[in-house]
Amino acid sequence: MELKLDIFQTMALVTVVFYLGTYLRKKVRFLSKYCIPAPVVGGLLFALVMLFLKVANLATIVIDTTLQNLFMTTFFASVGFTASFKILKNGGIKVAMFLGIAVLLVISQDIVGATLAKVFNLNPLLGLCTGSISMIGGHGTAGSFGPLLEELGVNGATTVSFASATFGLVMGSFIGGFVAKNLIENYKLKTPKESKDHSIPLSDFHEDNQAVLCHHKLMNGSAYLFFAMGLGSIISKFIQDTGLTFPSYIGAMIAAAIIRNVCDIRKLEIEEKEIEVIGNISLSYFLCIALMGLKLWELFDLALPLVVMLLAQSVLMAIFAYFITFRVMGKDYDASVFASASCGFGMGATPNAVANMDALSAKFGFAPIPYFVVPIVGALFVDFVNSAVITLFINILR
Image (tube, rainbow, N blue to C red):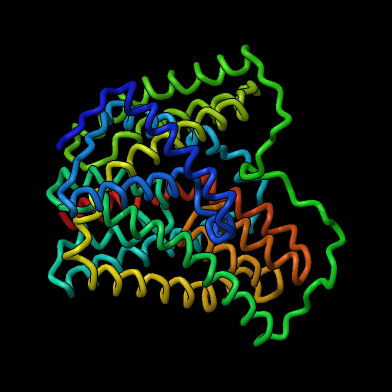
């Protein structure tokens, strides 16, 4: 039996799945401890139900994915509005150093992924799905590059990308604490026994439930996003005409970044919080739709290669954080916090990095510099770098 849902029925079901994920995240400590987002929880649960129904030959549910691309582009446009060169400049040398480390990690992850895919006689582009697409990129980048790779003939790319991203969320938290603890003990680092500043710096990952909704600001934020997406579609078409393979959202990100920096130069204020909120809502719906459409049965034939490639990425992340991040960032307590945070966003997402730092701060003391630098690099600039490197690898390997 096949059940086809129209766009309205799909969005109603997506909303139910999202709030189911929210409920489970509150009730199951494991999910909140490792910062697994509600859309991922709900979406994966739905995908598992679909897997059971297919294997049992009971039913198939086909959802309408018309709005998936709109939500995806809206989210990445909102990311583009955070790419302020003024903020990068104000962050100083530590921001530049940590961004450089992130670039090196992105390249390393993609080399390891593509190389191991060749070892298993798989398409090297499938290896990228276990590389920076899902590791540093997380579920958002997985949902955008997965379908793109499938268009290039890489079967199961979306499913592998999402499965790898989910694995990375959990493993990044495990590795982060392990690496930092060993660095502190092995190097006998001096740690603040108690923080002088007990307040956690404001970041994009602590929800403000007291915020006042303003129609004027929300409308302005929406206008900025739609204008960036419209201009971005022209930029994307121009890029695609060059013959290179780019995800559709790149144009919107570039347009948003241009608008943001022009506004900075002209000292014009943009509605950052409203743009961020609209972007986060779009991301939640995008992830739900993408994960609900996963064909988990496509993983059956890739079980062994996928496990080996993901374990290799975990080893790479631990070695990279221990021997490179720690040394480059100064070989002190702050550097150990940076190493732990790099595991968080290097295999999961920036909220995981913040969670890793929170855990260390609670035990060893507060480190203000990493709290400032990591969210700037992880939330503002790494998506640009990652998309550029992935695109380069795709055009080399295809």
